[in-house]
Structures are given as structure tokens and as C-alpha cells.
Picture 1 (cartoon, helix red, strand yellow):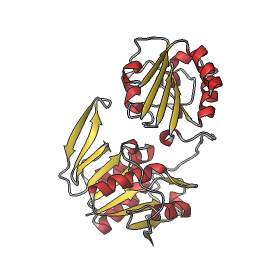
Picture 2 (cartoon, rainbow, N blue to C red):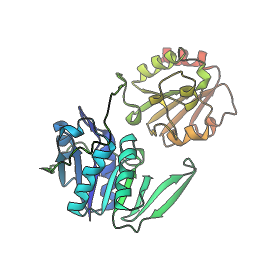
Picture 3 (cartoon, rainbow, N blue to C red):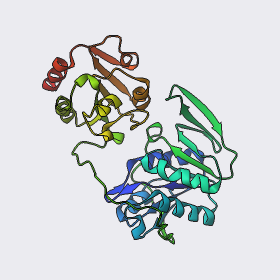
Picture 4 (cartoon, rainbow, N blue to C red):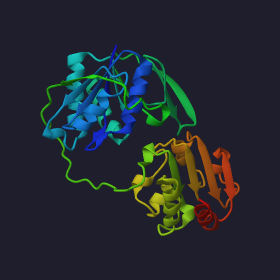
Length: 310
């Protein structure tokens, strides 16, 4: 078996989620290739340094400077046809969720989405019903197209590997879509999806202005800042803060939920956190059923005191 992992990267290097996907690939077994599409030398070097990776395939070209799902899928399909991969894996992030269904459709196979465990080379576990149940699914397709939930697998080491790097022929620009503009959130805080500590706020904060309390707390803890969908829908914070079934899936060492009642959709995005702390004035809030530590009280008094103590 030979597995292709589609790397996610930016101008600064490899996205951390790619190393989680490599771990999943190693559990399947077989030789692992990593595709880096785009002129990104730091990402190529980082991929080659991951233990367990046999080859890094580099497809350069201006068409990947701002990659579209159509161009990435076309490159993956070209390599799949030439190399006869048994599995094609990517992270279940916005990038993977955009490109991989196109690959599966073109190969006429059923994608296995958002896996959280590998049972065997053709059998995987994935969450259903907002993570309240888990399905064990077996694929009989000749090529398994799989997206991997990064938080379910430990990240492979950043160094220790010495994979061969090979330049491969790049596909032409499909011309079906193009990136017109990007608005990137610039923050000194850690990236939400990969942060070790996350402080999240909900509708209980009452306004975007009150989120500044959480910013102060997050800065003390060197934490990322998150939010519930209710807070995002209310306009308190941008939607890239959203944690939950329709937002980002996180599994930090410490998750602090402030003013979040604990709707099932939110719990689906953070319940794998190592330690969960909930602060809410409602003692019957569902979040307390999941929390390791719960504090019932007025968040407008508790959060400043906590920040001061830290």
C-alpha cells in the first residue's frame, strides 16, 4: 500500500494538521508520500523532516500561489493516476473539506469523512449525530479517500525524518475559479485549532465589548480566543472564532468556557479537551455535565478576579 497525504501549508510553512494526518496514515500502514502543491520551500522542508514520510512530492506553479479546490483536486488526481495510491488523506479542515470531495467524485468512490480512529486499512471510525455516536465504517472502494479529524490523532514529530524530495509535473490551471481577495486575521495569540489553551465566550457575555475581559484572560494564559455560535451570530466576534460542529474542532489541554450554556453543537467541537472549566451563572447549564471544573456565578465578577490572580 502507498498512501498520499495532501499537505496544507501557507507562506510560513506546513500547517500543524498535516502532521496529525501523517500519524493517521502511519496507523493505516504502508509507504507515505506527502504532496506539497505550490512554491513553498519551508513547507517542503518541514514535510521531509517528518518521521515516517518516504517521499515529498512538490508541484510548483503560480496556480497554487492562492490554491483553489479545483486546482488542488486536479493535481491529486494526476498523481493518483500515475502512482496507484491505495489511500488519499487530508485534514478535515476547510482546505481538506473543500478539495477532497472533488477527488472522491472524480474517482467515483465514497469519501470517508472526519475519521477519529483507524481500525484497519479499510475500516475507520467517524463521529455522527454531532459526536454523540460513533460509526465504524468499512470502505470497499479501490482507493480510499479520507479526511482526518486532526484533534483525534497525535501530531507526528517535526524532526527526525529524511524523506526524499521529488519535483513532479504540475497540472495546468483549470481556470474554473480564482481567489479574488483574502482577509486574514492577524493575531499574536496561538491559532485556535492548534492551541494548547483556549478561552471561549458565549452569549452570556452580552456584547463584543465585554469580550475584552476574555482577551485579558487569554493573554495571561497565552491562550487562543474562541466563541460559541450564539456569540458569533450575535456579532460579538468574527466567525473564525467559532468552536463547534459548524466551526472549528479543538482539543486543547485546557478549555475555559465562559458564559456558554453548552448546546450540543458547541460540545461537539470541544468535548475532547483534556481539562474543561466552565463559568456560568446557571447551575443547570448543560456545559456543567461535561466540565471537569465548574464555577457557578457572575462571570463579570469571576473573570476579572481570575485574571488578577493569574
